[in-house]
Length: 55
Image (cartoon, rainbow, N blue to C red; front, side, top):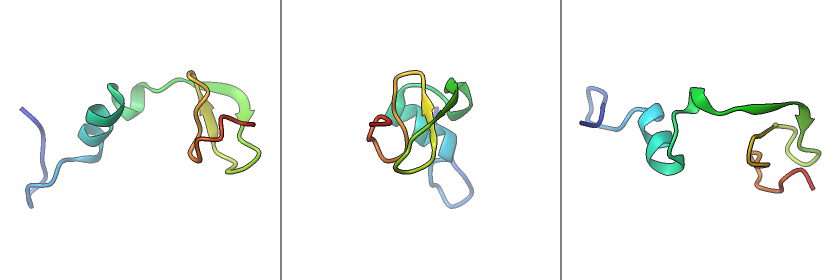
């Protein structure tokens, strides 16, 4: 059963699970790799917040 808050909306961790197949706290980030475009960390699949893959 999906978790929801009092207004019936899905909680953020459940939305991440539905979209990406893992909880947000299970994502592994590469040490010292930051996207030069959006300045966010790059995960184990090479993705960042802007989807530029650090290019």
